[in-house]
Length: 435
Image (cartoon, rainbow, N blue to C red):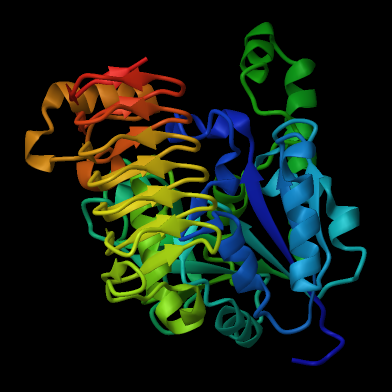
């Protein structure tokens, strides 16, 4: 790439109304800042952006309050030695409308290419390779795609691509019938031409609204149900109409890809990122054989400020955050332990997320047992997490969650349950939601 061809990256982080399925973990912490493999969720795509040649700036766009991201963005800019800015929308503008709203800021460095990523995507982000493919195609945009099972394809944006040229031929968001097992991964690279296309959508929509205003009363009623002119969706308003017009292309990743919509998926994705650290950041992974340090099995992250007793046994797929205290004889498997948690002697945590400042007593267990997950509990979980009670329970629902500042007293077993913040458990619970 020529040195004059600057690149900027935009990461869409959403807002508080978008985190309902992430409860109770999103009550006090913005979902994009929830830690996966010891790093905020948004940090993983940001780290991937740093590998893009000639990257000039990174923008985070959402409608969280600026104060919620100010400290993180400031420290990140210093760490990466690269400008990182949070841009707050006054209201949701849609996945395409959001970047158009801030177009003057995004284009101030006159970038040749603009990456657009969704924050709640977990993958290896092959951005440099994707950019090279985009340049070869010569189109306006390139979409990262992945193959999934035919049964799950209708949960995503499904697409058909030319097997030779990789041109996007057809795109449908969450189709009712099977279209293809190739899906949109929520990662894109565009030329600045994208802003003109978004503008055309807005102008066309405004023109139709004006036309209805001068027509019949019935048409006027239908206009009130239309989207605002400045709300533009990338999938339905841009990708679908431009498919088959030699302007959009695809780049397929053969590596892992997941959407991080629920706490269960966050635990799975934390494990995927920990495994990726073996290749990208092995220094972040803990080691130990039970002599001077705890016994470590598989991929484990332990924050430098955490104190873990040498007789503890940790892993696989465990992330331990800042100021955590793990006592003698503790066993941790497939879990995320958040800041300032205390886990006392001989306690066990399996397939769970333990919230900030929580405490787990001696000989207690916090766990999930999949074979015991009843339809009733799946329904209750789904109501709390605002999602359908179907699909892969292991990934979507199958974890026990302790909210912030939960106290589990000695010899208490918490199984297949969700405990909201600031609760004390002195009796064992099975398939309960503790409100």
